[in-house]
Length: 108
Image (cartoon, rainbow, N blue to C red; front, side, top):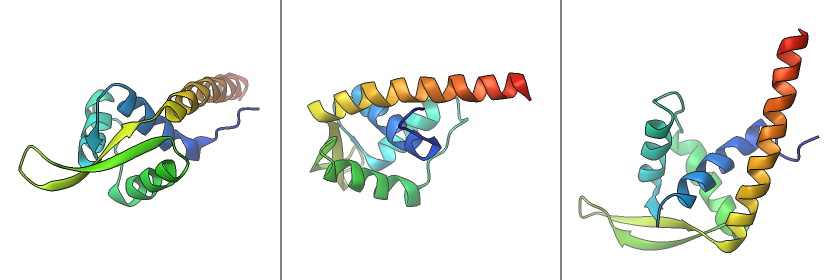
């Protein structure tokens, strides 16, 4: 049974997004997920910021203040070495979850 569940999917999406960029602010993460998923996935701020805070506390991401393209102050997030390890584990767990859901859909 995978350690991850559907609630861990947001962590996976954020970690994967940050693995493909140097650093992004929260809104940039939201835009990237939405764009990369062809607008199929939307992340609400009310879910994103608590997840970012939790992942930062776990050492998976780090943050620093910077200036956005529109000259506003924002917190930028980047993946840490620990976050890269977590991403690998989360990707594996998610593949197992997909396998299980697919088996259930074929069965039912």
